[in-house]
Length: 153
Image 1 (tube, rainbow, N blue to C red):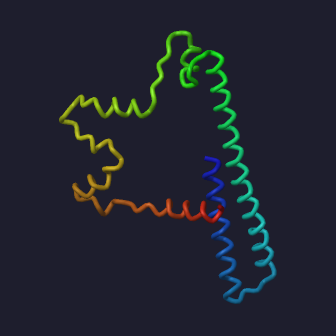
Image 2: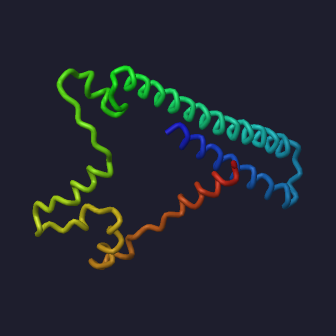
Image 3: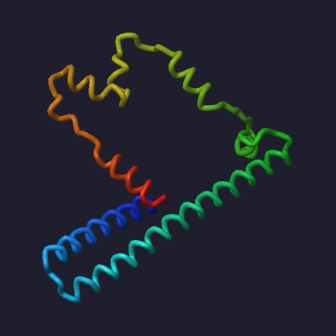
Protein backbone atom coordinates (compact mmCIF):
# COMPACT_ATOMS: atom_id res chain seq x y z
CA UNK A 1 0.00 0.00 0.00
CA UNK A 2 2.87 2.35 0.79
CA UNK A 3 4.62 1.74 -2.50
CA UNK A 4 1.32 2.20 -4.34
CA UNK A 5 0.94 5.61 -2.67
CA UNK A 6 4.47 6.52 -3.67
CA UNK A 7 3.78 5.58 -7.31
CA UNK A 8 0.61 7.65 -7.23
CA UNK A 9 2.54 10.64 -5.87
CA UNK A 10 5.17 10.17 -8.57
CA UNK A 11 2.54 10.05 -11.30
CA UNK A 12 0.67 13.09 -9.94
CA UNK A 13 3.82 15.21 -9.60
CA UNK A 14 4.88 14.25 -13.10
CA UNK A 15 1.49 15.29 -14.51
CA UNK A 16 1.66 18.63 -12.62
CA UNK A 17 5.13 19.37 -13.98
CA UNK A 18 3.95 18.60 -17.51
CA UNK A 19 0.97 20.92 -17.06
CA UNK A 20 3.14 23.78 -15.75
CA UNK A 21 5.59 23.29 -18.62
CA UNK A 22 2.69 23.52 -21.07
CA UNK A 23 1.64 26.81 -19.46
CA UNK A 24 5.17 28.17 -19.73
CA UNK A 25 5.43 27.05 -23.37
CA UNK A 26 2.19 28.88 -24.14
CA UNK A 27 3.73 32.12 -22.92
CA UNK A 28 2.85 32.37 -19.23
CA UNK A 29 6.23 33.42 -17.86
CA UNK A 30 5.15 34.33 -14.34
CA UNK A 31 8.01 33.81 -11.84
CA UNK A 32 5.73 31.80 -9.52
CA UNK A 33 5.29 29.13 -12.24
CA UNK A 34 9.05 28.61 -12.37
CA UNK A 35 9.24 28.48 -8.59
CA UNK A 36 6.46 25.90 -8.35
CA UNK A 37 8.01 23.86 -11.16
CA UNK A 38 11.36 23.73 -9.37
CA UNK A 39 9.65 22.72 -6.10
CA UNK A 40 7.79 19.94 -7.90
CA UNK A 41 11.00 18.73 -9.52
CA UNK A 42 12.66 18.60 -6.10
CA UNK A 43 9.68 16.69 -4.74
CA UNK A 44 9.84 14.30 -7.71
CA UNK A 45 13.47 13.45 -6.97
CA UNK A 46 12.61 13.01 -3.28
CA UNK A 47 9.76 10.63 -4.09
CA UNK A 48 12.00 8.66 -6.46
CA UNK A 49 14.70 8.34 -3.78
CA UNK A 50 12.07 7.33 -1.23
CA UNK A 51 10.77 4.62 -3.55
CA UNK A 52 14.25 3.24 -4.09
CA UNK A 53 15.05 3.29 -0.38
CA UNK A 54 11.75 1.64 0.48
CA UNK A 55 12.39 -1.14 -2.02
CA UNK A 56 15.85 -1.72 -0.53
CA UNK A 57 14.36 -1.71 2.98
CA UNK A 58 11.78 -4.32 1.97
CA UNK A 59 14.43 -6.48 0.34
CA UNK A 60 16.62 -6.37 3.46
CA UNK A 61 13.63 -7.12 5.70
CA UNK A 62 12.64 -10.17 3.66
CA UNK A 63 16.23 -11.44 3.63
CA UNK A 64 16.46 -11.08 7.42
CA UNK A 65 13.14 -12.85 7.92
CA UNK A 66 14.21 -15.68 5.62
CA UNK A 67 17.52 -16.12 7.42
CA UNK A 68 15.72 -16.21 10.81
CA UNK A 69 13.29 -18.84 9.58
CA UNK A 70 16.15 -20.89 8.13
CA UNK A 71 18.15 -20.65 11.36
CA UNK A 72 15.16 -21.79 13.44
CA UNK A 73 14.71 -24.71 11.09
CA UNK A 74 18.39 -25.66 11.41
CA UNK A 75 18.17 -25.59 15.23
CA UNK A 76 15.21 -27.97 15.24
CA UNK A 77 16.70 -30.18 12.54
CA UNK A 78 13.67 -29.67 10.32
CA UNK A 79 13.03 -27.92 7.03
CA UNK A 80 12.34 -24.21 7.48
CA UNK A 81 8.79 -24.49 6.18
CA UNK A 82 7.76 -26.80 9.03
CA UNK A 83 9.18 -24.77 11.94
CA UNK A 84 6.08 -22.75 12.72
CA UNK A 85 3.80 -25.78 12.61
CA UNK A 86 6.06 -27.70 14.97
CA UNK A 87 6.10 -24.89 17.54
CA UNK A 88 2.36 -25.29 18.01
CA UNK A 89 3.13 -28.63 19.67
CA UNK A 90 0.69 -30.79 17.72
CA UNK A 91 2.01 -31.92 14.36
CA UNK A 92 3.40 -30.42 11.21
CA UNK A 93 2.53 -30.76 7.56
CA UNK A 94 4.60 -29.31 4.78
CA UNK A 95 3.13 -28.74 1.38
CA UNK A 96 4.24 -26.55 -1.46
CA UNK A 97 1.80 -24.49 -3.46
CA UNK A 98 2.55 -26.61 -6.49
CA UNK A 99 1.26 -29.75 -4.75
CA UNK A 100 -1.74 -27.93 -3.29
CA UNK A 101 -2.76 -26.69 -6.74
CA UNK A 102 -2.40 -30.19 -8.16
CA UNK A 103 -4.71 -31.52 -5.45
CA UNK A 104 -7.25 -28.75 -5.97
CA UNK A 105 -7.28 -29.25 -9.73
CA UNK A 106 -7.39 -33.02 -9.25
CA UNK A 107 -10.58 -32.86 -7.21
CA UNK A 108 -13.66 -32.64 -9.39
CA UNK A 109 -16.40 -32.68 -6.78
CA UNK A 110 -19.27 -31.45 -8.89
CA UNK A 111 -19.08 -31.96 -12.65
CA UNK A 112 -22.17 -29.75 -13.24
CA UNK A 113 -20.45 -26.71 -11.76
CA UNK A 114 -19.04 -24.31 -14.35
CA UNK A 115 -15.44 -23.70 -13.19
CA UNK A 116 -15.19 -20.74 -15.53
CA UNK A 117 -17.37 -18.75 -13.12
CA UNK A 118 -14.61 -18.76 -10.51
CA UNK A 119 -11.64 -18.40 -12.85
CA UNK A 120 -10.70 -14.74 -13.30
CA UNK A 121 -8.90 -15.55 -16.55
CA UNK A 122 -12.22 -16.57 -18.09
CA UNK A 123 -14.06 -13.37 -17.13
CA UNK A 124 -13.83 -11.69 -20.53
CA UNK A 125 -14.84 -14.79 -22.49
CA UNK A 126 -17.87 -15.32 -20.21
CA UNK A 127 -18.93 -11.69 -20.57
CA UNK A 128 -18.60 -11.90 -24.36
CA UNK A 129 -20.54 -15.17 -24.41
CA UNK A 130 -23.39 -13.55 -22.48
CA UNK A 131 -23.49 -10.38 -24.61
CA UNK A 132 -21.81 -8.08 -22.09
CA UNK A 133 -18.68 -7.20 -24.08
CA UNK A 134 -19.47 -3.48 -23.77
CA UNK A 135 -18.79 -3.76 -20.00
CA UNK A 136 -15.28 -5.18 -20.42
CA UNK A 137 -12.78 -2.65 -19.11
CA UNK A 138 -9.40 -2.19 -20.69
CA UNK A 139 -6.57 -2.06 -18.14
CA UNK A 140 -4.52 1.01 -18.97
CA UNK A 141 -3.28 1.51 -15.42
CA UNK A 142 -0.90 -1.46 -15.73
CA UNK A 143 0.79 0.15 -18.72
CA UNK A 144 1.15 3.44 -16.82
CA UNK A 145 2.57 1.64 -13.79
CA UNK A 146 5.05 -0.30 -15.94
CA UNK A 147 6.18 2.83 -17.75
CA UNK A 148 6.59 4.61 -14.41
CA UNK A 149 8.69 1.75 -13.03
CA UNK A 150 10.90 1.73 -16.14
CA UNK A 151 11.35 5.50 -15.93
CA UNK A 152 12.43 5.19 -12.30
CA UNK A 153 14.94 2.48 -13.14
